[in-house]
Image (cartoon, rainbow, N blue to C red; front, side, top):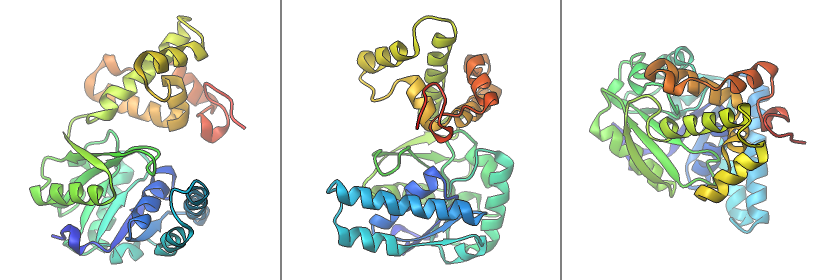
Length: 286
């Protein structure tokens, strides 16, 4: 199995918000990045996001121009999953759907070297279930980055039923090499963060639906009362209300009615008002 010192190239499956954010951080820490998506339009958007965020970091004196240019050069894109054969570690960031993830991991199992650790950025789905689609379940692990990846310091490492101790060590070491701080969770629904965060967002939505307070007062109250940077409605919009609903439904199926999605959350998603990415959710965006 590869150790941290063996990792030079990181493959990332999925060029969306999480994949591009992870790619940016990995590249700025000296690793080569192969960013994959199934459609060229999604891949191009992810590469453009990385480039724009590096430019923004330069403008804010968070990184110098030479380092930004070097990071940009380390990132290559592909729509052919077979190109990840060159990766020494893979991070999967595709849609939160078990079947889709299992298909990706089955393909990665065939494509990559047998010593490569295959990790998933899932926030709610069982690592054990994902690993079942491979012949190397001991080398499958959760490496759950927080959004936005370049800003958030924490990474949740998730231990599947068959995950080897060596794999956990590689996952912790890799995240710490990116200047992140890690914690570890067993493979239980929602792990640590979403087990608490998703019902918090849902309860904020219920407060609005039941007329307890206005949208602004709910978020203002939670920010001032608990010293968090965003209230539950703002955060739901930022994450994407469809993503929140998917996570809620996964937790509800596993843990029962205390995780039942709020009615207003389902109504917003059905209307296509998903938050920032669609221009409207609980707030409106230009």
